[in-house]
Length: 166
Image: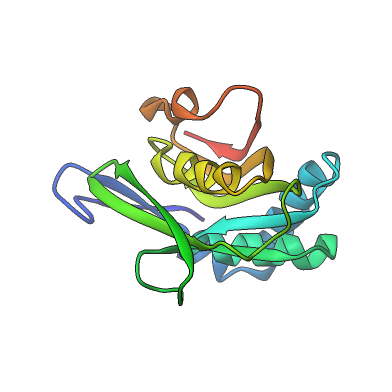
């Protein structure tokens, strides 16, 4: 249910397309339940998810756990005031931003994203949360590309969970 797309978005990158998985209700139920069950053990106050595919999974998990959902957006997508951080992607650079009023200081968060590659976007999301006084306790992914060693770029002391590992 995960389709390989060679040379996308740039030559040399093997893109993992989760669209077939998302089109299957049973698969989405399994992913939502797997992520929710894992994250529930950490007693988090909210779910933060990375723009854009992370929103799909993060919003479902937040709804299932009946806790708030906080979007971490690409640059220029949120009205001010925002806080932002630049980061490296597997194939370039980008910036993530978050409303600085999206949560209360001291809240416990799980960060959800679709895929862990180099760890740049997840690390940037955690950095945004912690700079605003939140505590990131878990980072959860649908897919992990272990050969890119993205786990090593994520902060120590935070749980890292993936359903599918390549």
